[in-house]
Length: 267
Image 1: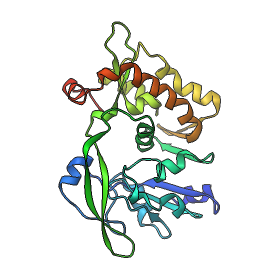
Image 2: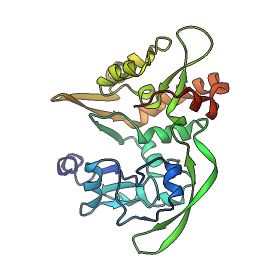
Image 3: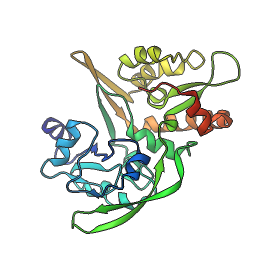
C-alpha cells in the first residue's frame, strides 16, 4: 500500500473498493445489517481492508458498495455516494473516475470487475437490478444513522453477456469480465475449462493485444502472475458502443429466468 501511495505521489489519489458485501447484494440486504462507514469491514480482500484502516484513508458512505480513498482532495470523488440511487451510477466514485483523463485501473494478477458495473449502468444493461429498491441504515463519520435508498443488483444473472455464436441464431455467452478484457493471461485457459470458446466473436481473444498496441493497457510479469494498468476513459469509449450494439442485437435473449435456467458456469 505504501508503495502505491508513493507511486501516485502527493498530488495523486489512490482508491480501492471497500464493499461491505460478503454475499450477493439481495441476500446481504435481507440480513438488514447496519453499515458503519467507520467500522464495517470490507470484504474484497486483505489489501483493501488494510488500506481502509490506514491513517488518512476516507471511505464513501454507500451501505453495500463503498469505496476507500487516499490523496489530495479525494473526498471530491467519494462524497455523496450514499445519495446515488444505484451503487455504480454517474454520481458515484466509479462514475466520477470514468470521466477523468487521469484515471487508471491497476489489476494485480486479477481481472477487471467493479468498474464494469458502472459500464453496465451506462448502457442500461438488461436485468441489472431487481424491480424494487431497498432501504438500509447507514452510520456516517459523525455517528448519526440515516436511511439510504438504493437499487439492488440481481444475483449472478447480470454477469453474462450475449455474443455472436460460431453458428446458428442462438447467441453464445461470455462472463462480463472476460468480455471486457481477458486478463490475466490464465483467464484464456480458465474460460476454456468452463466451456467458453468465443469462436463466433474472436475479438475477445484479440482485445488485450489491441489495447496494448493502442497504449490503453500496459502489462508486466510479476513472478508467476501479471500486473495490468488500464487507462479507464479510452477503455470505456471503445467498450461502451460495442456493448450497446450487442445488447440491442440480442435483447430478446436477456430474460432473467431464461439466463438463470441455463446455469452458465461462473468463475
